[in-house]
Image (cartoon, rainbow, N blue to C red; front, top):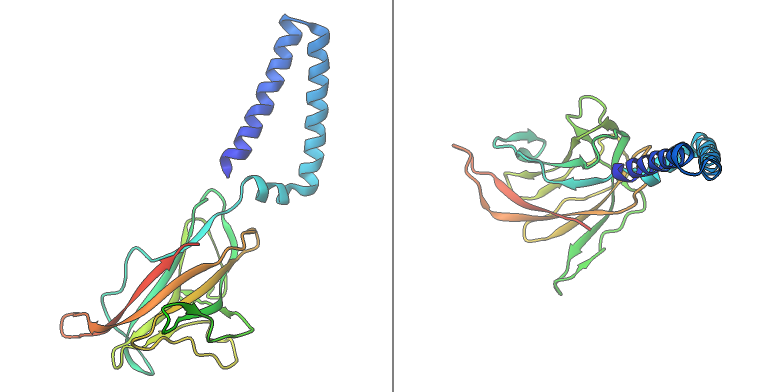
Amino acid sequence: MKTKSTFLVFAFIVLLFAAIFDYLYWDKENGKFFISVIASGGFIIAIITAICGDYLKEQLDPIYLIIELPEATNNFLDANEHGEVLCHHLRVENLTPHRAVKNCQVWLIGILDKTDQKEFSETYKFAVPRLMEWAPNEFQKEMRTFTHFQVFDFGMTRVSDGVFDFTNYSKQGGAFNGDCEQGKVRQYVFRIEADNYLESKVHIVEVRPLDQRLTFENNRPYDARITVIQK
């Protein structure tokens, strides 16, 4: 975190001032020795930083990202080939906004289905991860650089039958069906990638399509209960 690097810089300055104070007011020989040691150490650190600066920055001041529900959700309907739909989104939050996340992408790496034994199992397996689209997808839908947060398309609930229609990168080929039907519970396993993000944790989002309908004035769409499970 940022406090780690700040503490190291502060400690170096304190040691340097202590050595100078020792040289001026106490023992010149002892102070001179410590000043030379600190100066040599600083020179070595400067060389290491020049060579391995990016790696050290990631170790001392890593970026922390989480997937969470957006602060606001749609209270209106959209439409696609299935008719009217209620759109759902997820948000990637940067908990270290003093460091921008560069060329960030979100990948779906697994799907877990709740079985009759009330356990989650990987019944639907796929070898190639699915890329998610940033919203709005009219620009930079594959990857984005940001400091605070960005929203990506997660899926939509069909008004006609209540199925949760999973959404991923529209240009990615191959047969894939990530939808979740009424009466089912499905967990979507995500991983976040970025040029300057080293964490390899997974993020799980659970979807449970609901059999009751919401009321938006004259429309009565189905909804889905979406829960973010932080690991």
